[in-house]
Image 1 (cartoon, rainbow, N blue to C red):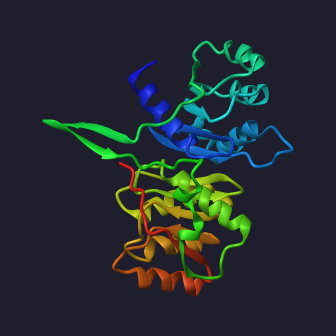
Image 2: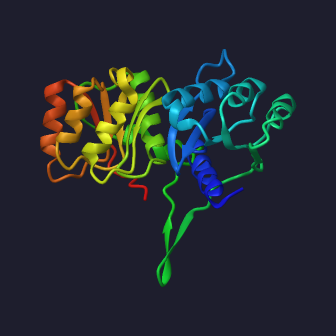
Amino acid sequence: MSYNNYVDADAAVRAAYDFINPAVAIIKHANPCGIAVGRDKAVDQIASAYRKAHECDPVSAFGGVIAANRTVTLQMAEQVSEVFTEVLVAPGFEPEALELLRQKKNLRLLQLPADFGRGNQEVRQISGGFLVQDADLFDPTDKLLAQTEKWSLVSGEPADADTLADLEFAWKACRSVKSNAILLAHSGASVGVGMGQVNRVDSCHLAVKRAGDRAAGSVAASDAFFPFADGLDVLLAAGVRAVVQPGGSLRDDEVISAAQKAGVTMYFTGERHFFH
């Protein structure tokens, strides 16, 4: 395991363990190539989550690091074995899955303890010292921390149940994306991620480009407010059907007006992520 392997593995676990549903995150350079949850109880949910996460950006997923928040099944292992992967982290592995994955010579398999939980603080070394802050965490067992009822509807009609579920998924998933972060999602999976750009407009363009035709009908989450309407305009032009963002810009009225003119549902959360 290299330094970068550990950093990416931690980022993957950080992303996958935000969800109470079976979830998979695929990471490259500490940013998600794809995040997804398995919702269909009629199928292997963790394998379904991996498939959807990989479909988000299969080119970038090559050589990536994967975390799952459930035991890796044989069906998931069969999919993973077809793609060059550096590290796979999970709370367990089915015997058949472990036997198959051990045949991949360069794949590192890491097992987390059953009672694994992230720390409540983050520490970062800087020149001459270090910084400590409370971690931006979603406890998947505490619905109050991601309760959509606390959001404010500022544009459009209230989201239906499926759209609201996708908005909540996107809001949780974008927490793991380095700011400026824009994440497009559909059916419990990211379909386009714009990360790490120095302005929010470029992140919107990147997310839309990665999503391609999948942008139309998706929902969008922004990790911080839109300072102007220009970033939102990029998403609206791509056909995004609903948006969740913190709000708090001096130009919120301008941004809300753009969403209203497009007839798009938009919620304010009142809190931001802003992962650095």
